[in-house]
Image (cartoon, rainbow, N blue to C red; front, side, top):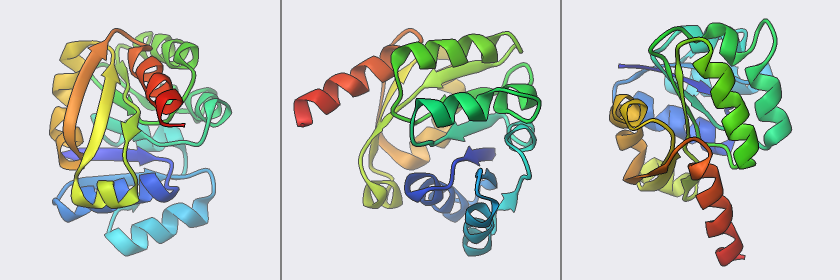
Length: 179
């Protein structure tokens, strides 16, 4: 089992650590290279120089970024995630983003023969560390099944909530109720 983790902020770093502790080969990438290096040193993960390199390194790519702008930037361009995926790759984007952004990035990934799950999570860093996240996944059920062995290490509950964009929509609804 091999996973790329793109975005090594608090949640992404915790995901990488949990996956490494479970014996998964992990490649990390972060826009701020020093942050990725710190995670790699702490966990034994490999470091990619670009999002493209990270996405090319594993059949499952976890994305954990701050917002729509960061997501769009990470996916696009010659060094972006889309350039690195290959047919059969599943990108599980755990970022909390606009459903339209999720669908747009999904279209770009699909054009390369890969699949995207908009799979935002409910939970905190301690939830990741205990493997107790809740995943709200939108996208193709077959892609979810391919990503499930990875997501299952991080989450207690994984819900398929509908087609592309449905995970992001559900997460926004949950956030509006919690606020």
